[in-house]
Image (cartoon, rainbow, N blue to C red; front, side, top):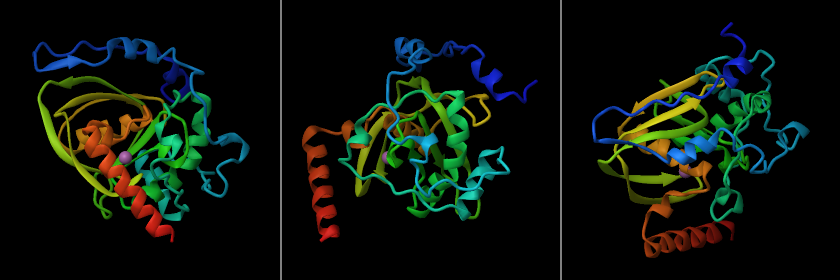
Length: 247
Ligand code: NI
């Protein structure tokens, strides 16, 4: 029975109470409640089903079932171009992925992995390749030992009050880095490509990376966590460098 992704997908979302420790608190509980009914709110910027993805759809005739197999298909897939700030799509909220989106998403994933690995980067969210859909990739592994995770409809359910500062960069803000302060640990829930619910408590670089990617799905960039002065400085420097690159 577990082989029917749509059935799994439609299973009622379970909310889990946080641990009794004061160190954790649930995040945006109203947001989480609204999340599963928030359909049709946002638009898709590239018409996936109508060939709007151009030449970036890899041959997935033998549909790979695991994240690892999908990521491995990146070797034969053309990398999708990554949008650079201040592209408007990076500022738009994405819409929830529906079961009927999954066939298209599966086809496009190898090209997204290809773009992320080529950059190289450790995370890539759908808006960064022009897609207004709530999914993202992360991979903290080495080229010879990949650790790909595909997060469909990810949500942060809880976070620690303890914060951690870490230097961040972003493929959509090339060559720009800044220290960003975020919750040290988060509990993240997402769907796998097969529609299964995953829930993990993560810390360290993975916690930073997942929070950064989930921010992208809300139209938020890492520079939004900085002071206005610092953010504007980075965005101006990026614009200048991009202009020099074009000329
Ligand atoms: Ni980013």
